[in-house]
Amino acid sequence: MSLSYRQPGVVLTDRHFTVPLDHADPEGETIELYAREVVAGDKAHENLPWLVYLQGGPGYGANRFIGRQAWLDRALKDYRVLLLDQRGTGHSAPANRQTLPLRGGPAEQADYLTHFRADSIVRDCEIVRARVTGGAPWTVLGQSFGGFCTVSYLSLAPEGLSSAVITGGLPSLDARADDVYRAAYPRIERKVAAHYARYPQDVERARRIADHLLSHDVVLPNGYRLTVEAFQSLGLMLGASDGSHRLHYLLEDAFVRTPHGTELSDAFQEEAQGLLSHADHPLFALLHEPIYGQDARPTSWAAERIRAEFPQFDAAKALAGDAPVLFTGETIHPWMFETDPALRPLRDTAGLLAARTDWQPLYDPARLAVNEVPVAAAVYHDDMYVDTEHSLRTARAIRGLRTWVTDEFEHDGLRAGAPRVLDRLLALTRDEA
Image (tube, rainbow, N blue to C red; front, side, top):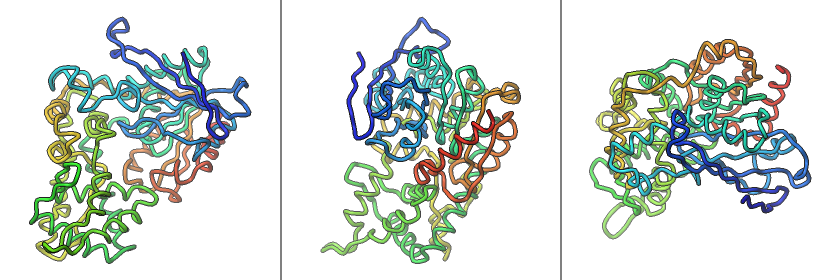
């Protein structure tokens, strides 16, 4: 039974769905999905078209908005919105260190997680769509990884879509994980250079912290072991509109004098552990490279291997000279499954996923080339998380797709620029239609 309730300006309804774990075996094991329906309070009884939102990640549940926050305000003018927790996230069969042991050991867990990529998410959406729209096609809004899922949707089930909007999430159709990270490290380096140009005092601050970590064993209050590589990974923030400023404020509060000498401050450690922990999104680490697997070759810890091609990211070498310590970005490494207590129990599972060789294609270039669904995509210039050239090549491969290429926003433009970003993209899909 669905439960409805109110927040300022909206009516919310909790929706629950049962779907096959393996869509190739529809009569086999099932899992439960959760989604939150949102409609404007003054339109609650109107027959509105539907928009389904697919969150970025992988591994993040849908936004928990209060009222008509961010882009939701614009969407509710025209749509009844479904905020779907993709399988494995939020309330949808959450997959983490606590729940995955129910599947058995690492081999069973890895087998289970092969069903948590974009193709399965799209098939879930089709079952959900039949339930909520009565079979009518709907609009999909895909942010980041949600955009990857949207391109899979256009490949696997375009008949389910009346239109599609993608923000910062046009994937390469054929790049391997190696290609993705070989393109990523130079982008990350540019973002770090821009940060240091904005805040030159942070060069010495980062060097001081890195030097401290190389000579001290630092364990954060939640049990996270703060190595120099973990510190560098805080550069993940630099892909967001306010990320450079947030990183600057974090660095300026790093040290405090104590009776035992200079130590990393409690304030710094508290904020750092919140930024580094995967406790609320472990699938981000487990599936981050498998989302690029589309053939018989393993991803094999691509970000770690490719990093060796860019020695300027070696903090010890930087400190041996006068080079700045470079932060890293959206990269997953095997050491994370040692340093992060939320990931440690899943280390062997992650290793098996990295070695897997039976990945299936996620995109259908032939079908995309004859696409008839109106599609618009925001491509952010020099996006740190999704390669711009890869995105534009894919845009050219999808018939009728209209792009808005902008340097006004970073990867989080849907948040930072809402509702203007969504308004512009919806207009582009209607122009195309």
